[in-house]
Image: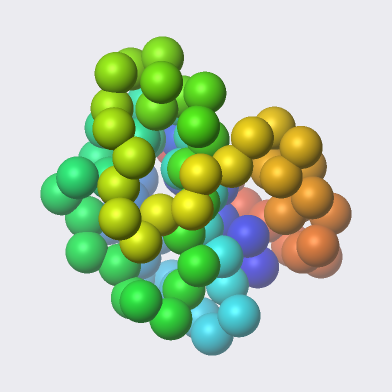
Amino acid sequence: MLHIISSPNAIEACTHHLLDNDEIIFVGDSVYGLKDVELDSRIPVYALESDLAARGIPAVSKVTLANMTRFVRLVGQHAISVTWT
C-alpha cells in the first residue's frame, strides 16, 4: 500500500497502520514534519522534492527525493493507496 501524507498532523496516525511492503510519500505541507518523525527503517520513505524546495526544507537522510514522475510511478505500483490529511 502507498501512504500519501499531505499534512504533518497525519504522520502519527499513518505510522500506526504501516505494514511490510508499504511505502510512504510526503507531499505538500507534510514535509514540515520530516525533521521530527521517526519511521520504521524497513519502510521506504519518499518526499516530493518540489515541496521541500518550495518550503526551504533541506533533504533529510533516509528519505528518497521524488519528482512528480516518480510519484505517479509509486501510485501505479500499488493496487491501494491512502491519503492521510
